[in-house]
Length: 244
Image (cartoon, rainbow, N blue to C red; front, side, top):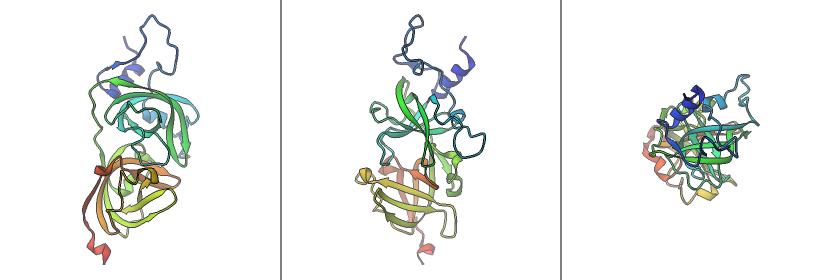
């Protein structure tokens, strides 16, 4: 009989797949983290006191799910940042050496839960790819206001809006996305200098209507949607009313 907590974690990545590299039942595991039962991502991210910081920051955690963004695909200055998603939520993971993980893979990740510049993320100690068919999570359709919150951080989402500003800083290029020119809620689409040749923001102008698929993220008080590649940015029209 499989204990309920373990069964839940396995179901999160799909129908009890075979875990490559797991030792046999009569062998003692050399790394208790590696072979621990994965926790639901929503539980890892839990914030009971409402201070916008997960209660388990500093703990070593184990999670499992589908890779929504491969490590290194998110256009951030830090190397190896990706996203893992299960049936309860998503979370950023930092795995600079995880070149074997691709979008849609089932994976198990263990590491230390951090909260840096407003963003919850797992600083990976190790990972394991699960032998299962690739399946990328479907993006959640969100409005700009609903995406600009902690609720969907770490999840793959699809948002459309109007570009109300374009600019660059020392770190990279970005544009600001709003539902319309009068809306207060906004998202930043940011691409660091290391990724500007791979994801070109220069093909979009202020006033363009765009659809962005990416991982909901955060930097300090600014909410972001981070594309994984150029195909995640689609031009869907020009907002002539805004331009006038």
